[in-house]
Length: 125
Ligand SMILES: [Zn+2]
Image 1 (cartoon, helix red, strand yellow):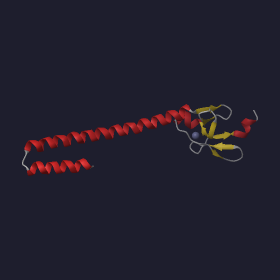
Image 2 (image 1 turned 180 degrees about the vertical axis):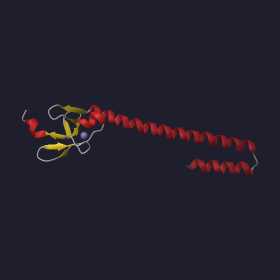
Image 3 (image 1 turned 180 degrees about the horizontal axis):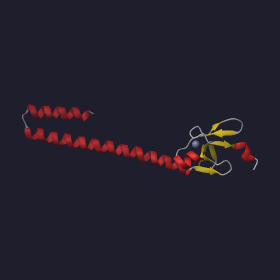
């Protein structure tokens, strides 16, 4: 960071002019700057974590359960289903959204827990 070079230069000047009070003040400022920088890093980490929580909450808010196929779907602003279905078991038990993959015939399978979803059979009900 640029201010480290400025502190280094200021310390050199204080030494050169043999001004111990100025030297001490610069060291204090440098220590305070380091604390502020650490606080800033911690706050940035909190912001990243909170943004991830907001993203997850928005995802949850737009998720709907499909009783017919026992799976979850994402919806858009108009409550229209979008994308591929998610595994209900993984979502409800592990709190993770795993897209179902196409399997044989009209079956879909969760690649994480191997739960099979029979989309054809349920259509007959
Ligand atoms: Zn699963």
